Length: 286
Image (cartoon, rainbow, N blue to C red; front, side):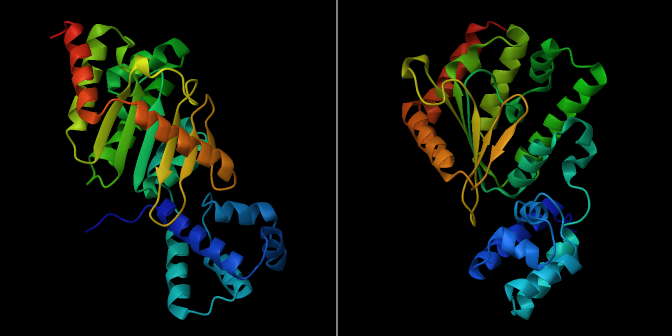
């Protein structure tokens, strides 16, 4: 039996259809909210997929937007029923801030994942030992540290092991693959992890060499999620996490151009793996 669909996927389905239906009805978010006697913030949360939608709330929107296709209405009602309940990361609620929880919901529905990291190996590619060494200086209580690492390992399993369908391309700055987080042995294991993941057809890892010079995102990492039925989503990874959706198209386009520029400057996939292999060999471990 197939596993039940994650509630975040149903919330996303609802937000796409309901947002389009509102736009087709030529209503602003404020106007639509007033007609169903909601706060505008509630409608915004529905249209960003941040909250579930009850069947009764859905029917109110269907009426306001003039959706008359009965098959579509039934499909939306089924999605509304499926939008309730916990997502896979809910059991990590104590270590998942709301912006990151929202990001995980989008990642679950994405078709492609494009990332750039200038300093360290990103969480979705880290070994357990590397993650432990990276988080150790932050003076995080041991029980919370364990929870954060378990979240990272579970996310990796879902990205790469559960019949992975997500196309993943990660560009790492050369500094990230040379920085000895946890010492030589830990880094060597981490580099081998990168080599192993790169053997998967859906995973590409490239290195931006020191010789590439300066570029727009020299100072920070970012993620671009791609969808078959929606525009890209930009996630800027700061200390607290900051996600930008379709509202700021100028910023999104700037980072899309930035990623294209980084990709043009980065080593090819084969050259990147050769470099990672040489760095691992130079560590003299194993």
